Image 1 (cartoon, rainbow, N blue to C red):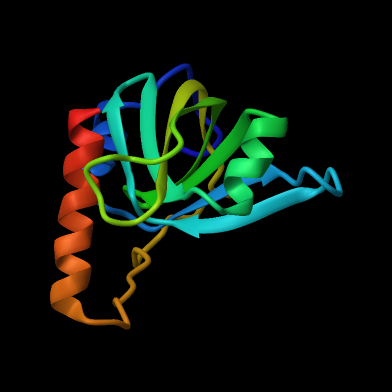
Image 2: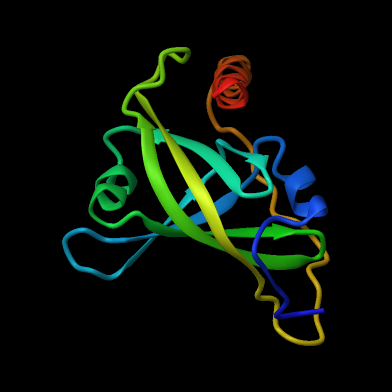
Length: 151
C-alpha cells in the first residue's frame, strides 16, 4: 500500500539494506540551496534507526552535509519506492580500513515513507555492473562494507 509512513526501517527494509545497494542520496547543495541528488551504493542499515554510508571525502555530498545535515535516501525495494529521511553526522573524515579516502557518514532515521504512486508496484529492481577491474571492485566493496559493519 502506497504512502505508509513509519518512524524507522521495517524488517524487510532493514534486511534489504544489509549489503551494497543502488540508492539515490539527496542533500541540499551548499552553494545554491537546491536539491542535489547522487547515486551511491556503499551503505548499510546498522539497525532500524541508523544507516551508515561511505562516500569519497572530497565529494560534494560531504560539503553539503557539513552545511545542512538533513538528507533523504531513496530506495527501490520490495516492489515499492521508499524515501528515508533523517539527520547525518560525519563520523570519520577518512575511514582507516579502506585504501580510498572515504568519509564515514552516520544517519539517524527520522521517517520512512512509502512513496510509490497509488495502484502500482516495481516489477524489476535496479541493477548495475561495475565497469572497472571486477576483482579490484569486489575487493574494495568487501573492504568498505566490512568497515561499515564494524563501525
